[in-house]
Length: 385
Image: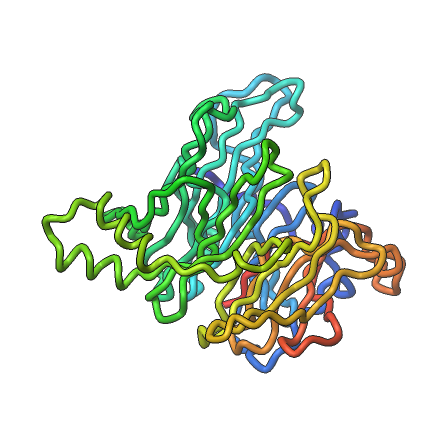
């Protein structure tokens, strides 16, 4: 079992020069929203201690604490002078705020002394930092919580060798899996060619928002990224009313009749990191307007709002003028549905502002009507519950 680095004092965090920002009152403004309450929490990732860590704080920036990640003090024997760290990446807080999911790996430091085989796995843990455990060793980076916090949806992509990670000759396929959090039940609801990932679970529990990446050419740089909705109720009805139908046939029927394309007909833009609004009427997503560059990132993007009924798309936030890499996912809504939190790089002017924030990723909030972007804290991957 991983042991959190609870010995890292908060005072030291506040005084340490950060890779992506400073953990001081001037660098954590908090999100300003009518949904602020004593029960509300924001989780996010940050390098502010020098390592990837998952943090939790109140919307006003108070009660900042480490939730997951850090040095593994009780682990395997290591070479002299080497240390092992658990590094969380994509992470999400459960709707009831009791748990988190995190796609994490263990990294040896220094690499010259200890370089373990890096493998990301999906962890489930308590947001008070008391415990964490692996729930799925083969899950991919993108996943979602059910609205009742009892189940999780994740993807298994069958395009990598399970040990060394290189591409197989066969075309990639994906499974979308629903797993009860205590691992007592598991169900595959989609098995399709291409790269599919569950971006979000609808507030009414009836749909999964899926991200689909297809390779239009021989290079991943030519790929598109679109959003689809999968009707979970229809899947259960097929299974219930056609007991003689195999799961593979049920998935085929579902795909033919209940997999709805949301953004695939929009020319050129790539939609990623989609999230349902709390009332389920809108979807916020990162929209990239130009192809991926050589580093695997889109060069220009914005934050878009999709109205589900009419599928109209509105831009609510643009990248600053001197930002070449656009917005970064994941994103999230405020609990009252009035604001969206996202991450992007600080501009040079912002880095030199009175807050004296070093360059790097920072989290911002913006009203759904658009307008001024409000700084929240340094870091990325926000989740407000």
